[in-house]
Length: 388
Ligand code: PMP
Picture 1: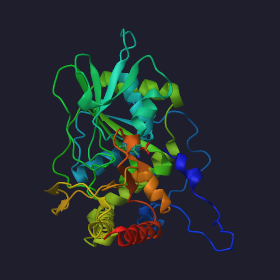
Picture 2: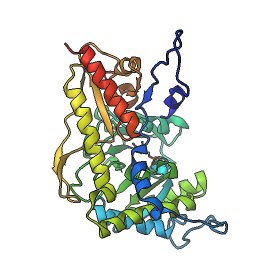
Picture 3: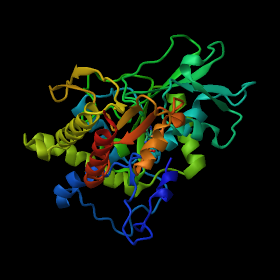
């Protein structure tokens, strides 16, 4: 997914006459650098000092089913879900992972019987998160097989459906495609946070995946967590993480606990929105979506999906989903939207990666402000040139 990093030119290119050519701006990957300005504003409140004697063990909590889970991180996760009201934490096991990317693999390992005659089918409704097929097929496992779009799937065999809500790439609010006893659902709730979408209820599914990357922006800590009802499934997930990485960085968990606790503390201390993390994130996303809609509305070249409006139980605001990504459709004669935007020095990820049409691209809204402003500027320029 980060392959386009290499296509970001480090030095400005010069034409034959010595003039600097315009740099590419990279809207392809969802690197959540937008959040850095909030955390800078919090200064030393989130600073954690660690000494050399710390983390001198693989183990964090030998009494816990997830023996590499730091108790402070587990408490902070529970506290955060209780504050936001976005997920049920009671009667569930928390399994920590190196990003929710590792947890996704742990879930596949845990849910697919090792003695089945055929690999288990893995599906998700298109457009789906582009990493799902890559991760599922990467090791050519005998346990599972990527079968693509859940809508096209023949449901006679048992299968696992990935339900991502709000969805990456298009921001839609999703439920499982079909009912039935032969399916197992995995809910990827990476974006079910109040800066992106109204929190309408506490999610209460059997297996729910969350990540620090899209909640607080700390993608570089590489931490995710799963809330898992079934003990046997949680145990198998822990086994996978034991085999693949003998646990998860303690240092990251200690830092993450601090970050999450500071979020909780600010909600107890102040009603100043710019100081409260989710309000800050909400305002920033609202601003960026406003800029994008204005640029797109003027145009004949692009369109955006209609997203649902709802009341958020956390903030009491009524608003439309404002996803981390824009799912942009090129209208009229433009068939390959990614190539079209690339000519205008904007890098995005084309629809085919998500099991969809090339008329679409995904563009990130959660990068650095300067890049985002430049993206909007370039998009507006395309409009004024190409519109009648
Ligand atoms: N699920 C979804 C839907 C995502 O968009 C992402 C990040 N792009 C992930 C999982 C993986 O997140 P992490 O950084 O925790 O591995």
